[in-house]
Length: 242
Image 1 (tube, rainbow, N blue to C red):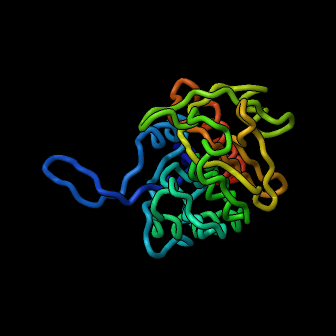
Image 2 (cartoon, helix red, strand yellow):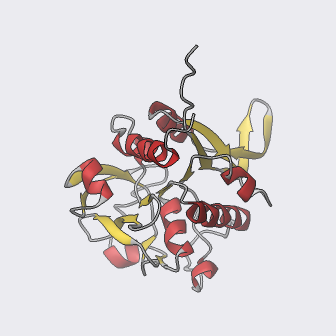
């Protein structure tokens, strides 16, 4: 009997936060299910990676790809800055877990897709810095128009970039962020910009697959192109292993 090829195993970083279900309200490990759906529709198998004190290397040894999900602000101490009044309180456990996972993934050339906060983690991990409150720079809140409300933006991609090949010259995307890339991390190149010149995507040419997008592709179920391309890159990196 022919054995079906194994679906790529994609780890998705998650939250450790208070949550409610049934009669319970207590700390929970969770991730928006839209990430899981996006990975599985693209042909992968998703596993949630909640913050924990140890074991990043053991996890990475079992994964085929890593997805750094959106979430709270990165601690500005990680890029040598004092907190802005609008920067959220540090989530030290999540920062430590995700920076450790990312470092191990890059060392292993494990494909990485970094979404929103994830792209900021990628930039900071490689020595970059962040704009802590984007409205101070661009003069409006269009990137995060209201609580739990995505802003719709048109981004233009850099010719020759991976994203240009996937999305074309422009694409309409769903944004929800009040922070953005400031100084670029080492080895990263901008790959997309919004109309106000905010960097909306990063790529790491010359190494293993590492792409960050400031928008939320998991929120656009009708446009699976980025997740399809990510899982295809994971398959390519894994080769023909069963």
